[in-house]
Length: 280
Image 1 (cartoon, one colour):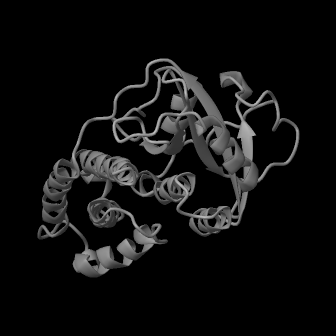
Image 2 (cartoon, helix red, strand yellow):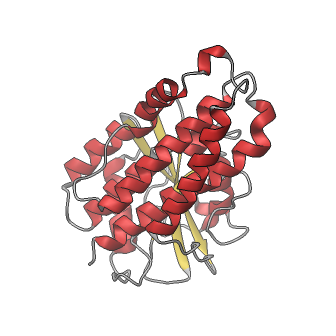
Image 3 (tube, rainbow, N blue to C red):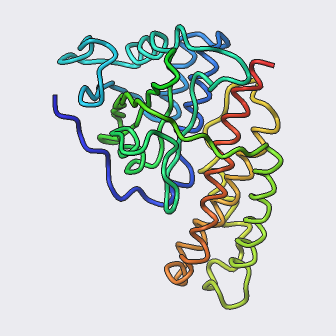
């Protein structure tokens, strides 16, 4: 089976905010028995689109012995597959969470085994959901691709080998990085003469984009510290977006793009923290 290539040229907006962040939490809440299957299916359709299909990348290793080959699949199949591979995975605060968020962007390679097809797919798409396995040397990753305005194709990759450890940030550390990024970004956007007149009211422009980045919501019970981190990341992402869409935007890339790393760090830290808090 030929695996579709992930969409190239992922926009900065998609790198700064991906619905995969929220979908990861909904999936994790379901795996831990806090939601029904209907709840998580409703959340996925609201967050990412009304129709979903699953494709297993057999070139990276098929953990399902061809079960999904050559037939239409759905979110139900994807949930069943996630449940199957995580069934015997260790579950404790010190273990890798059953699901996690993996992001990539300028200067940031995904935290997946180097050279794997899954790592290449996330690098191209910008985001994916990691799924744990009973074998600590195996990690699965689901990478979404929007085929049209209504169909999301999830490609399942199996990776094997040493998984790079996530950068260890506490929510407080990640929040500090975001605070520093916010101060830098706000200074850029509010500098006299930096932006054209239509962008001289950044609070209004940023507020409108924050509404975009912040929708839809999170499952009930997400750690307040994690939710705060994601909300702060939304604001910084919005500031970056407003700045880059101005006439001065392209010339500011060397100063603006490094701020996106703080956004990605905040999001992965928030999801990881939220998943571990479920076990405390």
